[in-house]
Length: 120
Image (cartoon, rainbow, N blue to C red):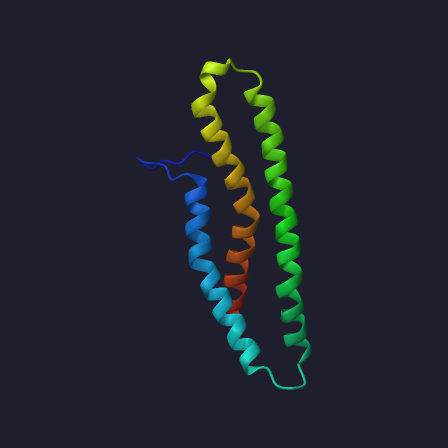
């Protein structure tokens, strides 16, 4: 999807800023929940604490897989161009790989922040 802005923001910057805003909110919500949880944990607290760990594992593998697929795609694309044109193409390919790796993590962090805002 093309941006209609005068200066389009690269995906890496969007994902980084989104993470910078969502992560502290999620951490604060979860630390407060841990602090307020009683000695016998409720099912809701146990589920949330389990989700905390499980989602990091899944996000890591989604990120790893997205970066690997983008690297494969970039290597195929870069192999089709003459060597003297590869400087800028390598930089753009590197940014696409970083963006592909940040996207799953950003998506999960933003979804967690939104979900935890609703829970009281």
